[in-house]
Image (cartoon, rainbow, N blue to C red; front, side):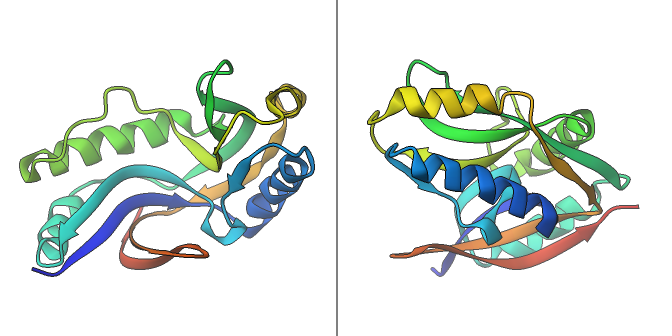
Length: 185
């Protein structure tokens, strides 16, 4: 059976990507052992589906088309780490304004996808993944950068659609392709 690695995302503007890319360059200069996300791949992940049968894409699309949402402004604000600052695995940029709207869309997405066997998120935290930490090398330098950018505003973007994306893993990083686009009102 043919399958596809897929996830739902909110896209961000090129301007916002550029400002977050500046943060990524700062992280790279720190000597920390971080694999940063390519600027063109920056987005807010709403729900990671993993490997799904290709035949299921259309069924999922029909279920998600029922989600009603209005366009909204999303502000990228602050930098932080998951799971916490003691053990850093993921570096992220948070969401300020638009947090409630994104969280509500994630809740509706969970409800629409539950019948397909996808688990509900325990606690959805809208964010833009900036990089994955491979080791704790130069952790203190990384912490200083996160502290310096704890309140930085990386811009705002109009979110006018939800996108189902295909992710193909390559040696140079993932390549994303839009499978379905769900416009907002």
